[in-house]
Image (cartoon, rainbow, N blue to C red; front, side):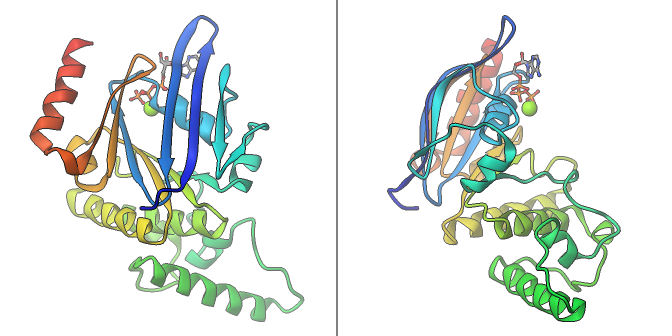
Length: 247
Ligand SMILES: Nc1ncnc2c1ncn2[C@@H]1O[C@H](COP(=O)(O)OP(=O)(O)OP(=O)(O)O)[C@@H](O)[C@H]1O
Ligand SMILES: [Mg+2]
């Protein structure tokens, strides 16, 4: 992790009519940091992530990505700035192979298809190897992969598209323990590549194992934050469960 601030959020609020989804959120996230957002249903976690992915426009407040203020809130402009949401299921096409999925919408265009495909395959191989993503054959259709492998392909794709800050909303939902562990191992290794990761999760134990920092959200606000290496799981669970109990 470096001391470069890659994402700065100031006084960010979002209202849906008179429903307060988030209010006056302020935070700074550093390059290579793994940051988790936890909190009860309706706390505002997804709303915050949807603003960061350009799905929603904030009601007020500012966001800076790599030092540049975000003016246009749409997915394209935010991806261009380097922030990408990894959708576990929605963004992959099951009946296409891994290479095609990684390049989806960003295919290298050349006259000779074979050359083009070979080049794409080599790039995909290198990308997956750098990320330590273990996939037996690049020819496999994505529909045949395990949940963990699918997550790996989705992450590789986001990075290929220029993602330097990745948003993962419940990345291990519906996965078994072993698969979840693999995904979290992959997330850990991303920070070595100076990729910053924002995770939303209900799994406090897993979040504690992987994150550098945890933000606890409640009713649209960040009510607590801590660095995981300054504390231990029980202490965190007490804080979080206390927060939950108070809801
Ligand atoms: N599109 C919307 N229209 C109206 N209200 C919304 C909309 N999206 C979110 N909200 C409201 O904003 C608040 C925050 O919701 P959000 O989905 O961000 O919570 P969350 O922390 O992601 O919850 P969960 O853990 O259940 O996913 C809730 O009160 C929710 O009902
Ligand atoms: Mg949510």
